[in-house]
Length: 129
Image (tube, rainbow, N blue to C red; front, side, top):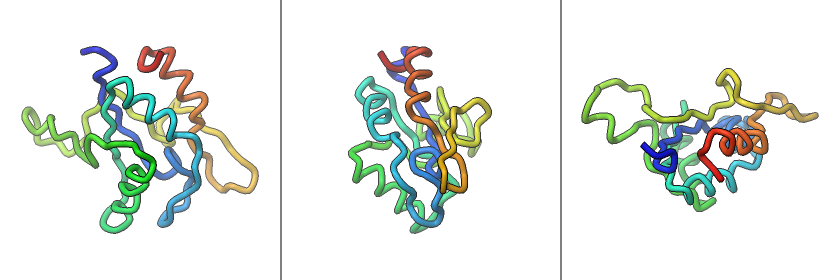
């Protein structure tokens, strides 16, 4: 599989926006990187603990930012070979993942993903040029 066909699962709170649950947090720089990944042929799956209206709010955030989602909380293609509820992806971006670059900002209670460093790693790993 070419990296450009990769499936990338991204968390929401603390990953594409700051932590503000149940509200939508502030922009942290994910939009241009996610758009670039999609422009390279990658497919993005939103995987989050949000449900109901709160999940709808997160999905709407992606739509407002012109980031098409391949799926939400599932990988539709994996049903062909497993019944596992775990989302299958080639890459996971999550503020709680070991090794995910995070940053702390004064006045913000919890750290969040550092998208400048994430982009650098995506280039190093061949997901972006």
